[in-house]
Image (cartoon, rainbow, N blue to C red):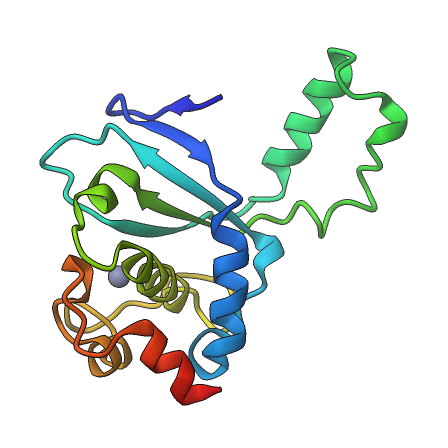
Length: 174
Ligand SMILES: [Zn+2]
C-alpha cells in the first residue's frame, strides 16, 4: 500500500529503516542519542520529479500532531476494522505522539553506485541530526551538511565516495 503525494510521488512506510536508526543511535550517542524512535515514522518515497533532487528528508510534524493517528484509529473502529476494545485512546496518547517523518528518496538512492548501504546509514544519521535536542523542531545545518558528518565521511559521501568508510568508523568506536 502506498499514498500519493501532491506531486504524484508515492509514499510507503519502511520499517526496515528503524533498526538501522537504532544502531546509529547506539553508535553515535553524542550526535543522535537524544532521538526517541517511537516518535518517528520512516518512509521511502518513489517517483519524485527530477527537479526534486533530494536524497533524504526530515519533516517535523507541527502540533497538534497526536490528534491525527487518533482520528485514524477512530475511523478504523467506526468501520469495524478495529474493535473498540482494541483502541484505548487515552492510554495510547504518548504512543501515538508522532513528531517526525524521515523519508528516503528511493529513486535517488538507487542511483548511488558505490557503498549504497553506507550512504543509507550516513543519510539516516544526517536526517536524525536534524532532530532538535528537545524533539521540538528542526535543527538546521549551516553548510550543506553538518560539520560532524563532513569530518567523518567527507563532502562526497552522498555519492558513495566516502573519505572514511562506515565500517572503519564502527571499528574505531567499538
Ligand atoms: Zn540536511
